[in-house]
Image (tube, rainbow, N blue to C red):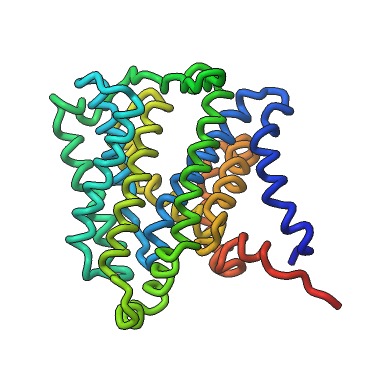
Length: 321
């Protein structure tokens, strides 16, 4: 659909826009905030997609997100664990729940896995919602400390002190998750996931360790999602069960991945960087009460017109007359 030279230029242009674009606009803090969270949701979408690459569509990743958020906050508040260490521990908590998924759901596929994952979202939510003495129950926890600055000697990123620092931190986090997502598509492990997705029985016959590779995808996906949850709690300054265990939040990375292209390296990232800013900067001011409905419309349009996502559409070779 696009000339080859333009298609090769697009990733470079995207990097330049991400690094310097928000600085060029007036009202910079707004753009830093919106595009920073677009990067955050891009990382969340790629984390979700790592499991989806194996052929399993999860509707319950909000469980990993919520557990990561609460584990990070409680470790910092109650045990004085440094914030970034607590966030990593939150990722490990999400990964632990993912391990339980791996064993409990190993025989489930398709709609059965999706429904089981959705049901499992309720288990930690109900526990945390009713454990008032530890988690604050449905009232949640407020006054959570902001993310501290990152000191690299001559280079300091004031993550929690300015929107600009937060923005560049989230760009870096998106890039880090993007490297893992790239490996999940282009490495030997990624080819094993692709083989399992296309024909699990044939992949097993050819020597692919179906359970092992899928278990690894589950663990990595849950870990990264849990880290996203821990970061989210400190970015927002509060956490409550209805916020971090919501079905809407669990479905959001699915929408972004389908829209951008699940099987493309940059697909989920592209979906988040296009759809989220468009919603926040264009649709929300124009339609404050109903702007979220665009996500349902996006899924319908994508299924009918771009079943492989907009990344696949952009990558099609240009037609020559």
